[in-house]
Image (cartoon, rainbow, N blue to C red; front, side):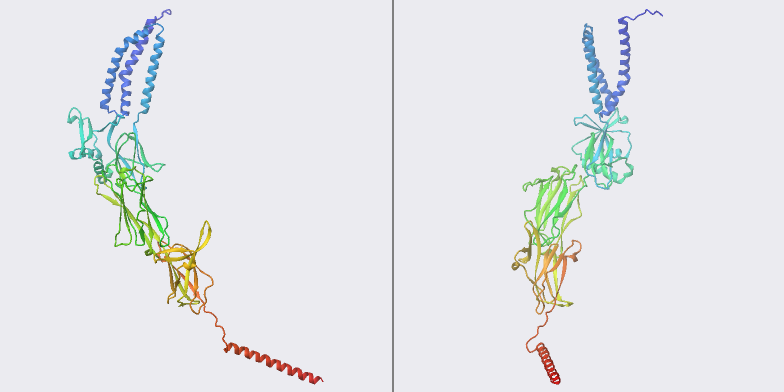
Length: 569
């Protein structure tokens, strides 16, 4: 071996060129196409298209090399420019690699579906209907494998074969016998709601024949399923209540259309007759996706013990008051029904929920007066919600069970009788009723007044208070009272009986579920007075007899003493 054999600079350059060219050919012909295929698939490019894109890229690269080759060669041959040119070229490649790596890292291959408002105890499952490709600019392509024979895809193909339903199927391939891919588009006849109802019906009939991914509960109260292949999905609940379609691109959040919270409360369940109570009805804007029109109507019926106050009805959505003139977002109606003539007792509110954000709170408030028909009874106020339940049938609705808010007033019944003789009833006893109230100014006593035979009023002057008198059965009444502590003051006793010195304490603690607690009986007993002696009666005779005995005793004592004195002489 000749140790003095040395390679010339030209030979070294040729060796480097040959090695680099061989590596380049290897990369271009084998590794890069495979890598490009994986990137294209991850980006949603179908395998039928990625080879075309690769060919376009190769052709474009060839043209660029042909154009830039002479220029780059001339620059490289210039002295003192080779190092600069090589450094610039490396920087270009580095930036390109960085951009390429960034693009690759941003590629999403899977997605997540989340139900934001799951109903407790309900199961949600996602079923893939179509494969989907998209370009990031809102353009989607929906496809199916023509050789898939699972039941869901067969249902989709059957749906597309119905021309009047608007789902169009296109076959890609050299012939019908060699179909390579099925593409789907829609026309003006297509209704997502109808398509969802069709899929739901098939799932209802054959639930075990479909394979889906169940959504699981998350820590934030939602349910979701991650790592789904990108596609067009049908999300279904085990009650058949949710039918929603979404494209995971790469995440989708949907709402259960049957998550329909509805509640009614009253601010004061126990009141005096004549007091004003405020009712609040709450709900939530439902998901109306797929509905051309959506019914959301609240109906409220007041009992005979309640009188609606006109002008107090208010509607809020998302915390904002809807102006009285906003007839395009809600409607109201008040009526007198069930023979009621004195006041309105029926309220109806309709909200156009499609004009608001899903999940926004709905609040309806109004006020009513508790009237005399509410004494010692529970006044039920019933509210119901009627809402749409079928996107393909605008007239199909569900009505919730009645939400009942209860208000009650109580009464005190006086049972006046003789002490230790409860069967001896005492008429003509008179009473007033009072209570102690505490305000910032201090404590004070106020008296019950039944004003105009319509409502309870509390007055400070006892002379203005209502006086009740017991009848022949010893009974008298104070009605229309809220829960609390009251005091019965007897201001006149029955003839022949002593007036009570102290008031009688009565505690009222009613109940909306036990009507017997709305009547509180106060047993009030009176004693007869002691008969005083009169002139000439037995009382004076006793004194006369006693006086005579004393005089006679004195005489006997005097005579005895006289005799003893004479005997001593």
